[in-house]
Length: 417
Image (cartoon, rainbow, N blue to C red):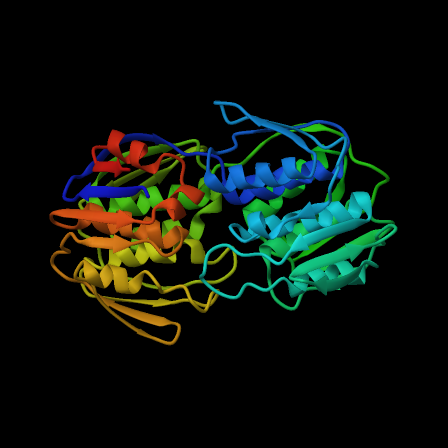
């Protein structure tokens, strides 16, 4: 099983290109199920989760190919099996995103209950509630959601809580429904907006994406399109935090600074210098940061997907930092691994108090989920000696060649097989 070995203490300098957003690419790939015409998606990152999604689509009969430039050609003219099996879904909960498109286009779907990172319960009840409001009948059988509908109909859906995949699933389903659908308390994340833009390019009538009410007027059919996935704001944030933690001067290209306001604000509070342009960010850091307070919340507030990376940086910050995690109830599993490196962290409920220490020390640590693995890489860049990060298959789910990109910036990092 692959692992990463990191010899800490090296500053990061140079230029890095940011990949396409995993969390935007996955729902956009499933949108191919909504049309019999080809969908070409550009700027798709080469990631394990993307491979899993393409395998899932191909099992259904969709033709799919990913080239070395990150372009995926999809054709769902013939869907032979509207089934998402447990074997694939258990490894990636985003697989549930095939549910809405399959019901909307075929009138039936059999989708396993999802798996993925063990960072919290993340139920799918809001997906089911919305689809049932649109006329679908859904039963549970042997761990599968079996859904049927002759044709979905427009409805007013008020989500009980903000859910990104729930919003995306219902928005896709509504594109082919009879009538108008209103999704209230909708997720406002940029990835939701990116999916809406792709659907609009396919002929969908959607307004309000990026606000808390999305309106979708159903159409008879969607057509093919070519669409470019937005840059990955979480990869962008991860590299920014890595530079803030290790020190250096790095320019990040191919980014969307307007999607990172909360992250940039908190980074500036630590004392680093950041300049922003239309599609670039420049960060200069001494490697010495100030303690901060942060609280995760749905977009546009501070993202839960950046909490672990910031916590790693806080381990050497001057003073005491405080983190409140409000999204997932089990997203502090990286704490005990950071403690193995010498971090001083105390957790009570959903609050973590981090007292900065003069130095972290290299050790062998284990990744427990995707963003936790990124936090351990950042900690390894700061630590003295060698840090070995095991179980990095989590990392490969969401970061494209992270060790290569960091190496080009001067990090002493290598993959061990």
